Length: 518
Image (cartoon, rainbow, N blue to C red):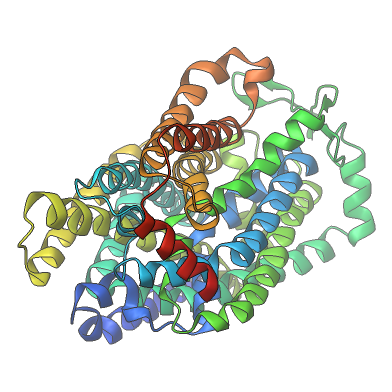
């Protein structure tokens, strides 16, 4: 490790020590009860609610995955994805946040998403709870693995350390941090990490633009590549054996591909995922005062627009500054790292790159904690051992934390994994499984328990069917799996609810009570 690498390493270690300090600070309070550990005792302020929700959601995908898409394919795919996510963020805060907070209190003070859905429909045999907990476990294991991939790629690209060793080290660090601090530590550090992330993105955006010769030069360079700087076209790298061809130092491209309305709708569908993201929905439930959610909505929306816009621009800028630096799709996700280490003073580069670490930690701790709570609270305490004490539940949750971490490590062992691809699958899974039923359960009084079960199962299963069986056929089946799975789930919820009769008077009265509160 040379002097520059050592400086970067030291600055990142300092950052990690600060994060651990936050975990230790909240450890005592977090361990007072399972409600404190899993939901922070519903004490979050508007700033922490907003910033932690967005930081826990975006992950290393924001600083590596999205810029990588823009660097490899150009503007359209990354930009339409960003537009869909920004719209989804705003609409989720506007229509779901306050009603979910109030309903979770009315529905037996629910502290997990499976708890809420089960209590909302007054079920006794906990089928909804079990389905929700199982899907959360499955998709969060996949999600956690994407974060471990990010850490492995980061340290491998920076210091040349073996990918697998760095990936495992990052997983162990996140596990330790989540183990001791719970939801409060996670939310407090996520707020700090959201600030680090947006600062890093904006810094690299301005420095990269200057290095490229200004915004006009960046645009001119992008327009010279077929389909690269278009909203209705897409660049097509000339690839041979998985590697882009280069002639006289210039990366080669085929003719631009079309980016029509069908593809745009597919990409915009990313925004639908927000309605089913447990790590975001829990923040709505955890705020101390629902009337402060309007402030949170404004903070979150501004943060998302700036961060997503900067991330897309960084990919375009990277192609202008380092056109041949990355010749595979997987490697293109390192463009943020290359820009930072090449254009910034060494120690500052370490701080900026800590933004990737921040994004990874802020997401993976949420994924691990929610998955652990889904098993310990919703399966172990509700189904396996109903008389389990609070302390016993927390001990089980820590065992599950370790188990999920190990499974995530196995999935992340392949260093050629593409972060964007892993995240897109898990995002679709949550969006289609939970998004429709959250919307229906909060906004339609006639939603029934049977409709909820049918919607969750059909949405979650369709993600697998579409991704693994239908999508490889191409053509109309090439659409992002979240869109058809979301639609199928909505159809099943509505149709089965209509066929199964009206909900009980108790459920409808409770719905009206929440409606008046919201």
